[in-house]
Structure formats: C-alpha cells, structure tokens
Image (cartoon, rainbow, N blue to C red; front, side, top):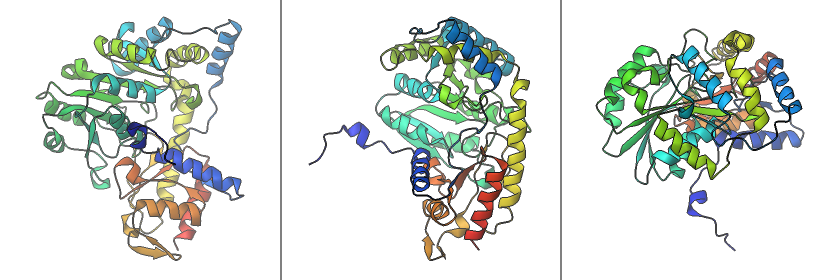
Length: 395
C-alpha cells in the first residue's frame, strides 16, 4: 500500500550530513568504533559566561512566549554586533530572530521566491540551500568551482549564470564545506556584476564569520549598492558552541524582515526564551572571549592538512575559515581498493566509513562531486586516529 505523502516531501532529499551521522550512529550501536568527522558541530562546551546568563534567565522566570521576531533587547544587541563587527547599520525592525540560522534562511526563501524563480548557488554550497530552494518551488542553478580556484567563482561565471528568471544568489563566506573566505575585493567584483541586475537579491550566510584564521571576512551588505538587496544571516551555533540552543537571525531590508516575521508567526512563532536571553550576552561579548576555540580550530586545521598531504591521491588546499577541509579525491575514482570499486565521491565516503570506520560526507551533497568533506570539530586525538585509519585503508 502506498502512502499518500505530498509531492513536496517526496521530492525533498534527505540531508547527506545528517544521513551520514545517522549511519555512523547505527554502526556504533553495532559495536563498531566509528570516528565521526561528518557533522559541523564544535566539540567545545558552551562558554560558562553564556550558561550563567541562561541560568539567570531561568531564575528570573523567563518562561513565556517570546515576540515572534525576538526580544527587543536581543534585536538591539544584534544591531550593536552588526555595527561593531561588520560596519552594518541595522535597526531593530530589520532584525528577525529565528530557531537557528537554517530557519532564517528558509524564511527568506519562502517570502521572496515564487515557482519558476531561479536561485544561483556557487558550489560548493551548504547541503540545505538546494533543498530550501526546492521547497520554495524555485529552481536552483549551480555555479561550479574547484580546488584549483580555491573554491571561488569568478565575476564572469556569475554573469554567465544569470537569466531573466534569476531571483536570488546565496553566498556563504567562510564557506561550508570548503572553508573558503571571499575577500572584500572579490566580493566587490561580484557586486559589480549584480549591480546590472536590480531584480536579484543576495542572501549572505555569515554563520562562520568568527572562525577565521588569516583574514577577517567581509559582509556583502557592507557594499553600499548591495545593502538594500542583501539579507545577512548569522547565528550563535558555530562560533559560540551553541548548536543545540537554536538561535539564528537576519538583518534585512525592513519589508523583508516584516515578511519573515509574518511567515515565522505561522510556523514556529518566537524562538526559545532562555536561549534568547543567553544570546544577548553572547552577541555583546567581545570576540576575544571565544578566541581560544578559534585558535584550537586553527591548530587542528594545520594537523589535518599536513596529515592528508601524506596520503597519495588527496589534493588539499588551505582553508581560511570554518572547521572543514574539502579535499579533491577524484584520483581514486575508477580504482578498486580492498575489493571495493570507487566510482565517485559517494563510493569513497562509504568506503571510508566501512573500511576505515571514519564518517565523512560526499562532495555530491555540496554540488562538488570530486571532493569529500571532513570536519575537524573533533579532538586532536580523534583527528590523528581518523587520518591514520584512512591512510591504512588506502595502502
């Protein structure tokens, strides 16, 4: 008997990162020692000063429904953060707080996209971008890049991808899965193309902004000609080790923020009250209070890159931010290893899970089929052991 599910859910792919994490959990339940490098979740505890703020909110009896778009004090704090860190001027009525940055992105897509609209996705891109576009009945168009270009697209590529149906483009810097950071000059060159197409809106996902090693990320909305067409997305999950707290937010033109508020009011309403009170403390804290985590991520990045470069067939660049490496593994395609034929990155990722007991994510999920993603948001001990297992499995 078939189940009468909607075409919407039947057409929606399963998140590859979550699927791999689930597969790893299944194998662990069977007694296998799986090292998980698939999820982008910091292995640090939430800083004590943020936990203390949450405890204080509980003791102050914050337990009621929150405003749909967030507490005013939090929106004011986010405005302060945008000015301090990004040189962006937003007012509270331009801010919408959501249950994670993923909901923020989904809200924006739902209120701006119509059936038949096109969304440009510079690849590699975060796995949920394409699914969110599909849920909005839009069509997504990938703009490819490679490890040779440091996973960045060019203005010429952008211009060639634009059609009369193009409505949005999603930028993500520092990037998940590649760790790439677009410089101010590179963003301005892309903006020069977009200036010719006033019907295109820009979603700038900056969730990893504080996890940068050699260069400070630049906000796309800081380009004057782009400000009124850009939605800046951020949140607390990555930099503050608050993945489970589920707080994300946007800064946007007021009419877009108002529409997102309307959308959210019919879906989830306001985000968690305790998490919001703690978020006020987090966003107002100097970035130096989380620098210890960034320093540790940089150490781990260097370890991963050096170890992977010792393995023949891995092509690795040096990411400037986030906590991922995205090596090109196409050298293994068409080869048989330990009796397993590797046809593509999905095969390779599954091979590493089954033969090396290491969970990674195929690059197919990110629109870049020659690569796999490894997260180094894990302990140095786990990282060293994981790369050792990969090396041995590929001998």
